[in-house]
Image 1 (spheres, rainbow, N blue to C red):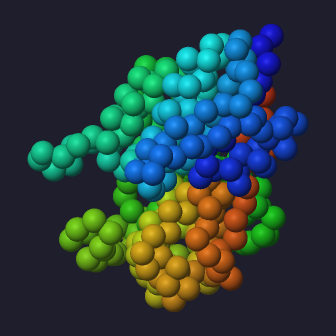
Image 2: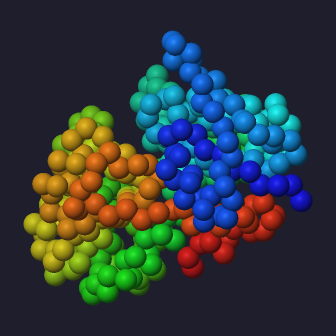
Length: 309
């Protein structure tokens, strides 16, 4: 069987080191050379010939992170790697998965085309913004589920009278899955946007009086929606409001919005590094989950055992 070699892009080194430790391998040696104009030239300092190569890199901003990943895949293929799996804990541009207005790009499909064209044999990721993005790829996609990380933590809190809330209509399926694990009820915060990253109005569908409410989302960007939803839930009689979110993009006024909101706690993962610390934000690691998935992929085993049922 081929040797496993794990490499990291420069933006995800903090997470790749934890994945490698959990897997039991060291990270491979790679160098990220830059020309004076900013052009990148990553290369491997060790042979990958005949190896199963796993390249770990989330594609959050800036776009250099994506370009670096593509170049590393190309380098591995040209160095005769037996297979190349891109491990993308956070898959950027996933929010642009359809034409919701005229003359707009479907960026998620373009991302899939670029990764496939670079020579990747497989993609491993976690909590895509929309499940159907898996169908944009013509290579196998291993779509890991954040419930594996969050459900054990929520159970450890021992909260009674739990109600799960979706901050928008689009997240109903994700929230319903969480509610099913706890045999709990679900409510929806129906929002209307004037423009991207700006919520004009929001109303609650359901009853949360006296409940400990858990908001569920795949990512938080400016934090405006989650803050407005938390405040609304408290106004409607909730006992407490927490939120779980896999990808902490947290741009612009996000930290200020979260600190000033009614949220008791925001639980995120380390698919994206936090820009700064906050007493309201708790981070759980996805390193064990990805390490187990890498091992199963290498051993040609099913990853279904990694999902909570």
